[in-house]
Length: 135
Image (cartoon, rainbow, N blue to C red; front, side):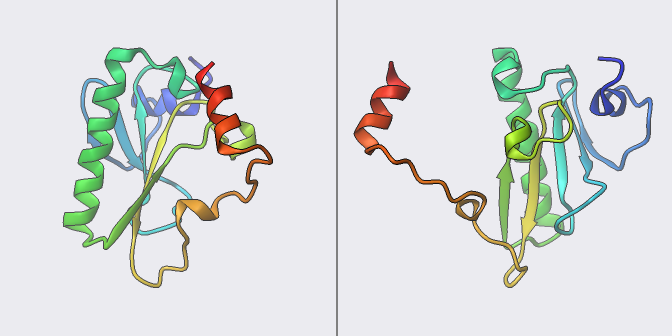
């Protein structure tokens, strides 16, 4: 997509601090990092959401995420990692191109677990939620 910021980065049309690249994915440092080494991993094809990514590219994308995670652990001596996707405006996605955040974590870094992202427990039972999701 010609007006997509991340597509332009994937095409090397605009600069980025690239730390990993293969045929399917590109990983670069977030320009507004929340942690040292905060990296964004994107598919090179334009899709806004994970469901839009061709099944043959999902595995390779997450292999790239795994490689970046390993790099953070080994080279930055990260004590932990938070890995996540903001999908859709309600979640905070600001660039409508699928991207996976890899945030190196350190003791006393001020961050919380993934459970601290939202506080909106279901009003229905887990059994009712399971039925909805399995229909």
